[in-house]
Image (cartoon, rainbow, N blue to C red; front, top):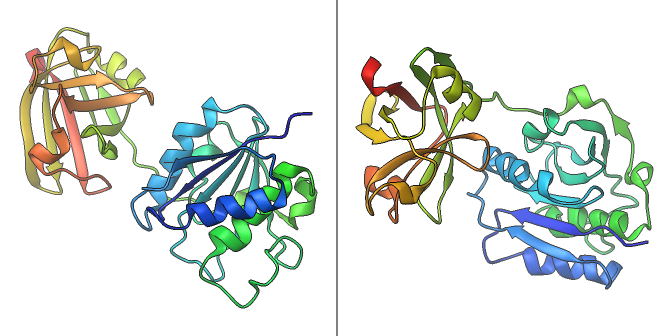
Length: 281
C-alpha cells in the first residue's frame, strides 16, 4: 500500500526545512516529502492558515501536512495533529493555523503530540526547534505507519481548537465590502474576504467597470474605477483589473505589474475594500 506524502510549510525562509526533511527521511527513506512554502511571513499564523487552505483541497486523502509558524514555540501552546474530515492530517502548533480548515473540509478529531513517545531522541533539552524535533518527527512516524492517529497522543475536544476571528464581508445590491486578507507576493496581487458568490449577488458582471476604494483604517490608499474581467489579459499591460481568484474570492491586480507595490498595500483587519458597480457609485 502506497504511503502518504508529507507536505511542509513554515516561516523559516531558507533555513530549517532541510533538517525537517532529513528527520523524516531518517524515519523512512521511502517517504515522499514536498516543500509547499517556507516563505510565510514570520510569525503570521493567519497566513499559515490561508496557505493550508490553499493546499489541502488539492492533495490526496491521507496526505500529512506539516505547518510550522510557531511564535509560541516552547511554551504551553499545544503541539497537535488534526485529522481532517477528508482523511488527511495536519501536524501543527494549535495556535490558529487550523481556523479555516474547521469550516472546510472540517476537523474530525485532534490529538496532542505525546513528547515522551513522538519526539526526536536527543532533543529533549531543546525547546526552540519543534519543527524538526517534534512536528517533522511525529509526521514521519505517522506517514510511515509506525504510529496510527491514536498513537499520536491524547485526544482533546475539537471545540478547544484555537481560532482567530475571521474577517467578514457585506453585500447589497451593487456593492460589496470586506477586507484585504492575502497577497500573492510573487505577482503583486491581493485577495479579499469577499467570496465570488457575493460579487454575483451584488450584480457584478464580467466586462463592466467597478469603483474600488481601499483604505488603511481611515486613509484612502486606492480610489479607482477598474474593469471587472475574467483574467489579467483582458486589460492592457500595466492596467488594474478586478477578477474572481482561484481561491473563490474577489481579487485585484495589475496585468504584468505589481498592484501591491504600486499602491503600498498590506492586509489584515485595518485594510478594507469597497467595490461598487460604476453606475450605482
